[in-house]
Length: 392
Image 1 (cartoon, rainbow, N blue to C red):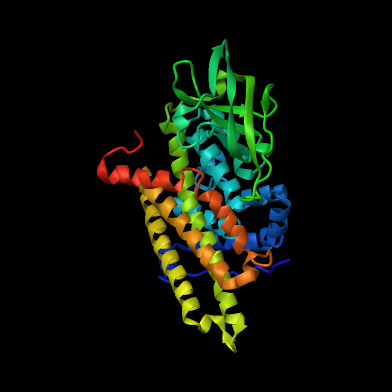
Image 2 (image 1 turned 90 degrees about the horizontal axis):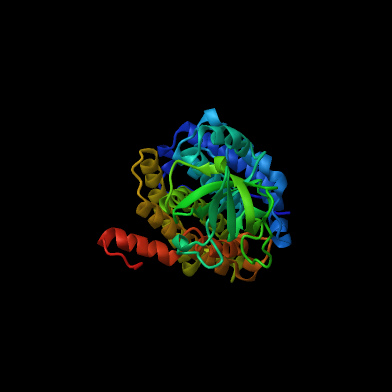
């Protein structure tokens, strides 16, 4: 059982920009992760099992809907606090952060922003504690980067609607109590609808064979003439912009989380470089190893500055979708590069479960693809700076 020795790295003294509350939130999350998650995460990944007993603890540290107002059971924190918590979770494992990110940004956020008062009161307090868990149904077997082409649909039938279709690659699906599903109504407009476990015709088969995010549960959502009350439709907004706004919130969390994974890899490589002796001196004394470490901390620091500023813009209501895309793409790509360089520094030990690097590498190969691929986010930036749409 590996001892978590991580302490944190702040090369540009960004802590001086944080409030005391921010630091307390980070310390609370970090200590919980070290105590409850780090000792078991390697075994969970090897077994390809999500440790569900952690859910109440995630609720206790405010990882579920940190920015949800207190009137709905949330902590009512700012966006930088949300980012800090996601960073501390992914510093341990991307799958852990995925579980909290989906619950926060893809389940609680749309209910909070687009739900009725009754829906908010019914779902949000239980989601905030982890008593109730949710998932987000957008991606389909034949529609990933083009969600607007979805075929999942519902038709009105009295006070209900009849939902048909399927969603794929859905985090939390196997154990979720509810699913916020995006489907087309009879007019072809996309709307969100809350589907509850137990509704006839609704199933959530687990997806097997993953080599990435192994400590996170992934499944499908199958809708076979599922009767859902019209009262479960989120009325606040329709069209593709509704689910994409939820993804903005989630991608923002990913931008912070990826830094956590990179920091853990850097921390591991730095410590190893001082302990591992070759040719009668620690390998950290060799120029090429110092080059790797110097480049790692430089890129991490740049990502920290980018994301902190993005958090300020989110709190001010000024952050654009394109700015969020840039941060998600840059930071995940950075984390992958750091992980690969760190793995090389550890040599053969880098592929073992004694160290976290290979697990981070495998996880990040999913993070670089989900919620907008590396290339799609590149084209979003291209569209933003040129005004010319490469998607058509």
